[in-house]
Picture 1 (cartoon, rainbow, N blue to C red):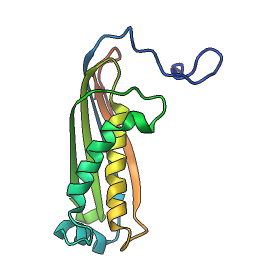
Picture 2: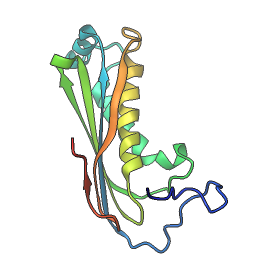
Picture 3: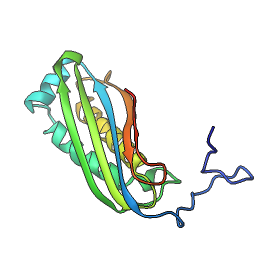
Picture 4: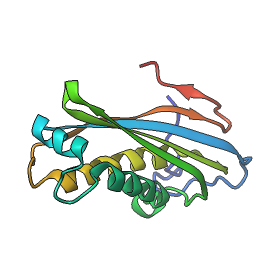
Amino acid sequence: MAELTHFDTAGQAHMVDVGGKDSTHRIAVARGTIRMKPETLALIRTGTAKKGDVLGIARIAAIQGAKRTADLIPLCHPLALTRVTVEFLVDDGANAVHCRAQVETIGRTGVEMEALTAVQVGLLTIYDMCKAVDRGMTMTDVRVLEKHGGKSGDWVSAE
């Protein structure tokens, strides 16, 4: 098993030194889902939620989340992101909204955490905007789908 990189030999948490790594084009894709009542999904689909355009606001929130990841996750490096895209898919059959985020940078460390944060913040924003009508919404299946760039190269989920 690979060694955990956020701990030194004494077991103390530290920020990983990426100073000696080459800058490469880094890409990460993550996704997640929020499940809800059919009536809640209808409000989102029709744009009639009391607080406004749920998916439009969630998209902006997700992008902001990606940009602020280092402020939220203590040992993440602040990164100059070159691209963040966020897509939502309304899934009537599952009474769900799926969120997919792709984050890119030219840098010395990957952007998996930024992609995961974008997805989670997007889903949390949907929850916040719809909780008045559906407190039982559940966020699930948040995970990295793929990453590209860096010394370890490409990785794509088998699922």
